[in-house]
Length: 288
Image: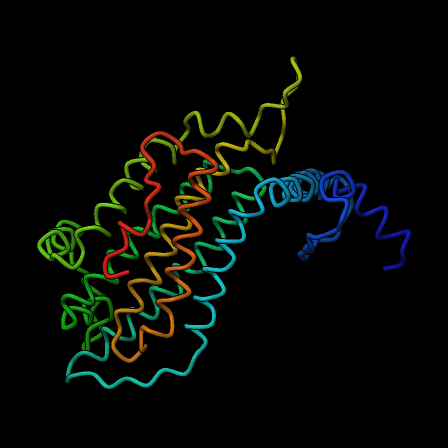
């Protein structure tokens, strides 16, 4: 793109107003080509998202940096070559934990994309399956021989995963998971309150000008901070669970993951919290 095209792009997206130093990349994604009669609605929402993503990344840069760092740690871990030395029958559990962590990391990235443009209810809804994924990972740690139940049987029968109550009971009975289970429980309570049509949806439609609403993206500082705090905790605990795998040599991760936890606590204290949110992540990470 030539300089004039870049200048025009920055103006259209609001980048020239929100971040004059140009410290934020404008990410492009493929958009279906076609006449306005086909694409006008999508493009309106897309352009609104581009503008408000820039606003959020500028005003809430510190929080999003923590989220980005956790995704980067997860990416490096999951892209590594894995050699398993596990007891007989435990290999499916090792594979399952890696697969679940991959799903959770992708879900975290989707939640970030929703949060950064102001789709707060949608972001909260994406975090809920991360908690269930973490519980499945933890259960596979405690009961590795049960991991086969996530896979089709040798006779082609459908997977028969343990029910939620059984997994919750196993985690509650283990002292290794006391703090992490409590932390996820607090987040889950928040998500149950706000991941449906709720006050979390209202900032998405408020323009700040009487008589006018917003279609699509927006920005609300307090809701954005709250979701970043929930998401970084969920992503942090997924990585913490992955580090329990013996072959991972946890010392390679512990320093950086714990440093992010401390930075998160300091950021939370400066930002303030949504009601019921925990600001002491070091206390909630078992073995951290």
